Image 1 (cartoon, rainbow, N blue to C red):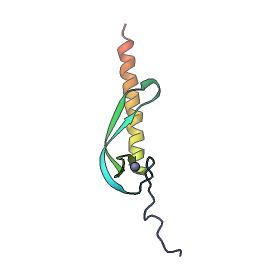
Image 2: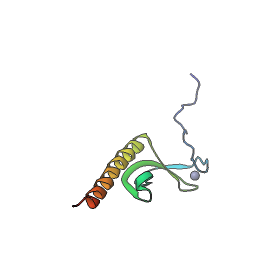
Image 3: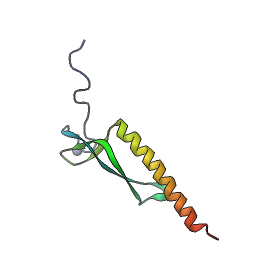
Length: 89
Ligand SMILES: [Zn+2]
């Protein structure tokens, strides 16, 4: 037994290295890259940590899985719509 529980304060902000993070469930905006660059998907009710210093949002593991699923779905939706749009004969 080494004393301190490891899960006490594991998180540090990726941007400013601040440790003052608040757990929230909120909408998380994702900017797409590649063929859909410039588009943005807003994933609702994502579990994440918000940095109190700079406002950076960092999804939890569960939040990240949800974001990944929605981005995948949204990307296909966008591409499908674009195909429909341009393939009319
Ligand atoms: Zn920060």
